[in-house]
Length: 149
Image 1 (cartoon, rainbow, N blue to C red):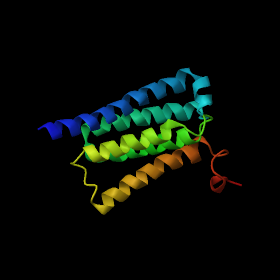
Image 2 (image 1 turned 45 degrees about the vertical axis):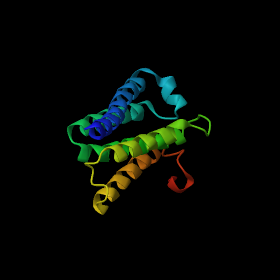
Image 3 (image 1 turned 180 degrees about the horizontal axis):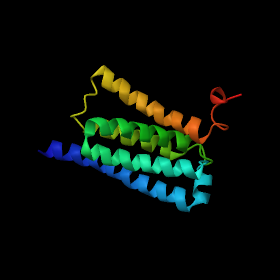
Image 4 (image 1 turned 180 degrees about the vertical axis):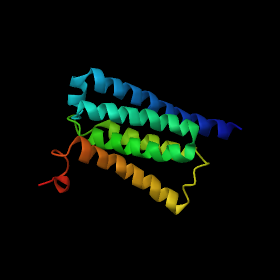
């Protein structure tokens, strides 16, 4: 019982943290243009990403199997946004978002991570989150290989 309680607590904390951070980011996108500029993100994208994170956290509580896929996309996007912000190279968000996802994967034994299709889907959703930042939020300032024209 102790191990199950601990693993549920860790995963639930991570999902709840993402849900609350999503609400904060959505509000920041609506009410704080300077904060969005500091992160090098347009306001509309910050709001949409915050709503996506909120939904991802809530979906994990409803269905861990599907919710983890959406959590992977949220954490991929969070890592990409942190990496491309105007903050110093030592931005902890890159590592924290990835650590949150890893903690959830480790602490949720019901996830079929040994299934190759599910693991590939998780990785694909993580990449989806990264690409969303580079192609939607930063089409002109993304990596060189992603520049258009």
